[in-house]
Length: 424
Image (cartoon, rainbow, N blue to C red; front, top):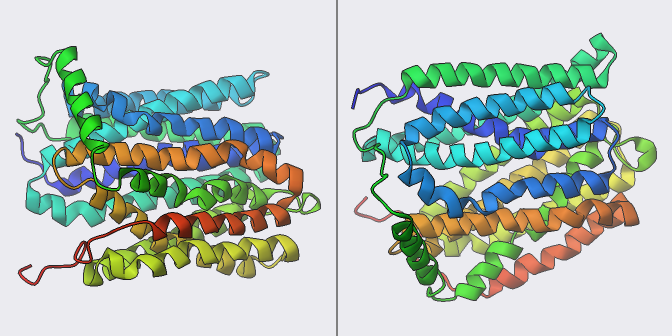
């Protein structure tokens, strides 16, 4: 392996991992809202884009078997760049909806495959000490990518609308910019990524070998203690968030006459893409610190309350419809901070459930259930909101939080899990 400093490629690799995910899951919402699509159609179409992350465990063995992780990374970055350019090209066209959705699908599958390859390459390209050292750095740059995408890029689209007087042209320029960024990532990583000796083409594995390994993984996954309780927890712990995530973004930018807050793209970029992401990050960091000190079980119920109770801020915002950007920002920060803190319990439980043989493959299956938990509520969230209005919809989200408490009450967790050992 030609040794290169991880600082030269870990930050850029995880920045590149974050941008397309945010483009698919967040930017697409604002784009379609500005282009006049209804909330029902927006949430239905964009929720299906979770599917590549749901079925990711099905093709991850082929990514592991065919070609190298390095090859998959640079190839997927080309495809992501091409799909971003495709979205940019189709936005001004008459077939903008069908065309942009097709390219968003390509982007989603390419991004999910890039995630598989990048996470695998991270373990091959770094020794154990470096993996531990850079785990926080990779997360930080993923968050920076989130702020860049949902904050700066959405704000840029708003600024360009003032200059060009055209919604379609301004958004097209933003997606062309992202396409150029990924061509730059492709060129840079093609040169800068190391070539670990362990990163080899494993083509000697046959299809039957892969099927046998996958079957063993699934069988042992469903043989774990509390398997159905665990699956229910994975599916329903975030159910309120699954309802809230897409509609809340649409609520922020919807017209005041429609019950929304009427934020411009620049204001949305500041409130949700910057203030909200900072709150989410700080909450996640605090959650990790608390769980590592006292264990997951000790902090489980405080984290449950943190991920559910702050949802009430959207009830307040929908009834009052404040015009103050400071007021709105404080509410979004509180909700996202609570979500970040409470989400720590969810991620730690996935790790807890995945312990034992096949832990990597089992964790991948857990993340599939995690994606499904966001996909299913999102499919009908927009239709529900349009049928009852924003205030009633957010009240329904708060009531749905009862499901989070129910599934959490059924868990049995080792009190020592997550605690830092005295020997460490």
